[in-house]
Image (tube, rainbow, N blue to C red; front, side, top):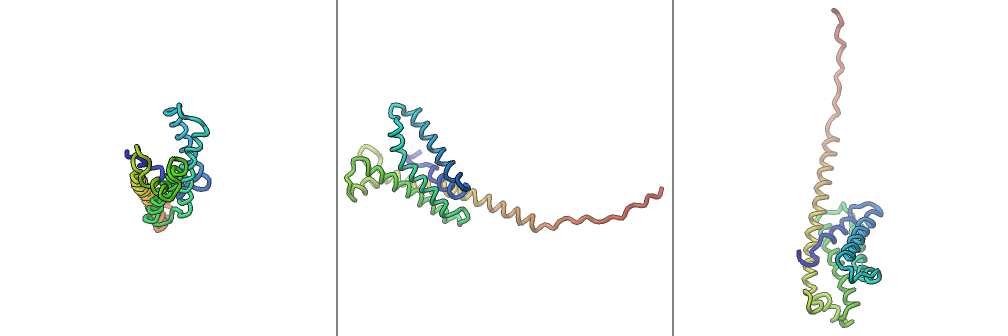
Length: 183
């Protein structure tokens, strides 16, 4: 898979759309924190420290929380195309937040030109950050479209079933006269 091509952006956005109450916040954030921690401890134990982990992950979790908040603000009852656009805006939000944080903590000039460099070219020796943006936007749109499309299909089926049951007349039992018991 290409760098930053992930269903995570869509999952966080859709959690905000469809999971009720505190579940919309708790479930995705706890799951991602637990998996990030496990991956870091298992695959990169030589680099692990709680302080470094929390500092490195803070911008990601802030951006994820923004995705959830965006989903909450739109609500799942909007048209498919608007929710798709919301998922893509969320992916852009994630990109801007995380790359702005990288600009703040890494060796970029702390100028507008330095910020643009962080958003477009990145650091030498690494893929250009506009490639990450392209993959973030593409995957955010693709997976949001799939998840929201699936939810809209389920909603349409449920609506169709409820309309069918509402339209069906209730069966009327015919009254029968008791048969003569003449034997």
